[in-house]
Amino acid sequence: MPRATYNGCVIDPQTIAAVMADLGEPPYRARQVYEALAGGLAVDFASMTSLPVALRRALAERLRPVSLEDIETRVAPRGAARKTLFATPDGHAVEAVLMTYDKRATVCVSSQVGCAVGCAFCASGRLGLRRDLTAEEMVDQVFHFARLLRDDERRVTNVVFMGMGEPFHNYDETLRACRLLNDGDGFNLAARSISVSTVGVVTGIDRFAEEDLQLNLAVSLHAATDEVRDRLVPLNRTYPLDEVFAACARYVRRTHRKVLFEYVVLRGVNDTDEQAQILAARVRPPHYHLNLIAYNETGGEFARPRADQLAALRARLEAAGVSCTVRRSPGAKIEAACGQLALRRGEVAPQP
Ligand code: SF4
Image 1 (cartoon, rainbow, N blue to C red):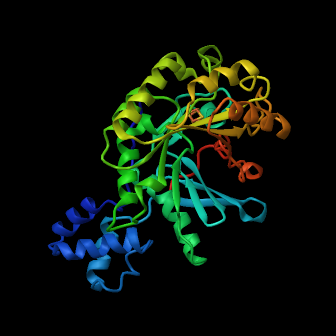
Image 2 (cartoon, rainbow, N blue to C red):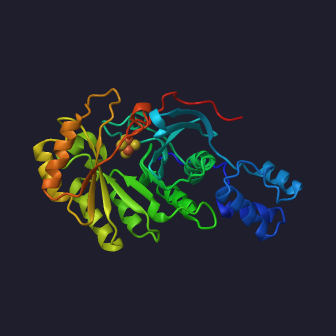
Image 3 (tube, helix red, strand yellow):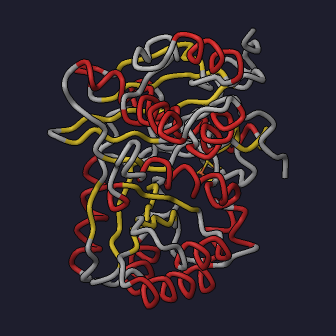
């Protein structure tokens, strides 16, 4: 597994405290800087006018407040979704999406450059894994959109780790990002407003159950039987459905929290009567909820279900007692919906 190779951003309060100590500054100065970055969303030290000019210069020589450079943004009709392509300092491209609906403003974060899982229907999976992202690079995606929202006097209400990558293949940095977003002295986003989505990494689910944060767990199922899931999600051969559901049951027992199951509906593949029947037997309320997502075509072998087919699947599941919703995909038209976060531009030039 390639490790994160660059950690240029300083949202982490411990890094800031260490640098300030090296500079001979008192601890309250470190807190000032951290609050300006993580609470005030500052993009440079020059704007921190409460600091002496010499200290601002010294910090700028040592630290970089922002790790990602935004390269391009595409906006969906009526502004319901906005996808930004970022460049990492070592020249990779990652994407994140902001979805706004009513009072909610949800940022979908990428946790890796590419993905090793290689789900058959996923554009990100076709890239293979390039490297893990650092926590700072994940948090930076959120801060980027938080700055945009601030201009409209709005704020980020939810963060979902459902973009490019398998978060539990980059577990430590993903959890560090969650803690940074949740930090009451910094960005201060409620843990219950943060969701981490896995395609079924059982060891990750077990670790997640032991965390002391009230984060949400989402598990991408995409099929009700191993036969179909083996074809869609190669990781199913390592963690078959019985093991995934056993881990989810342990998670519920340990945390008393619900599990959200995601199900990308592929016409004629995983929306058959047989799949619906088996799914209904496994995804039982009150602790399990199912989110159906119409597949967004990415030029592969699969087809998107028609609206009436999706409605029929939902009706079948609900009739069988499943707690079920259909997720809107406001980003589909800008290739920002689930499975479409591909590197359209390939590698991008490193930052100077
Ligand atoms: S769906 Fe998720 S886990 Fe599967 S290849 Fe795509 S990014 Fe990776």
